[in-house]
Length: 251
Image 1 (tube, rainbow, N blue to C red):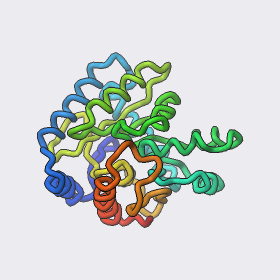
Image 2: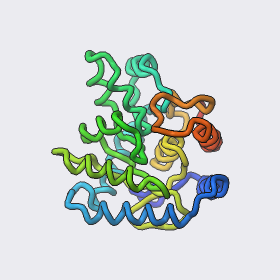
Image 3: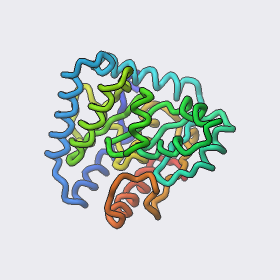
């Protein structure tokens, strides 16, 4: 690891996989670049102090201290996660990372344990389209690993606007999916929110064996998925499966 605030893909093959995904779906690299550059510009022109570049680097360092240096286990909440799975994991010394709208499952928990679950949610990996669960995390000031891609500018702008209107805007880390080096942003690899969360954790320095996937399915579209074409989503989930297995994480 070259610097404690770097987030570099475990292997360049993860970046090459993003090229394969673009080619498969017929997406243009230029659209991903434009969205990334726009996200960076909007965040850095914002008056939110915690969104400055040096504070974003500090957020990465804080996340590394909490998730990696303490040698804890981490559960990634995926789109098919069930309340029972979250309740079970709360009996163990495990921290939580949400894959976008999957954090909505925390809203369905019994009141007696909901606050305990929210307190264990370390960050949310999001491209901005997670719906009510994502907004609930924004209102609580949970850190966001906010991702840009070619067709989500409207989503990330909406999320940023919601965060700006809170008393304590969520700290940010910015990610993109281009092979370019973009100062102030990172590309740890990944395609969907779930596998991107795993790429982020491993880039942060977490060992793969410490990662547990909850509600991560490649055969069904989970209830916490954003609005999507189910058939197209299932194809995307096959790419997710390939990426997670490349990283050596079981689910």
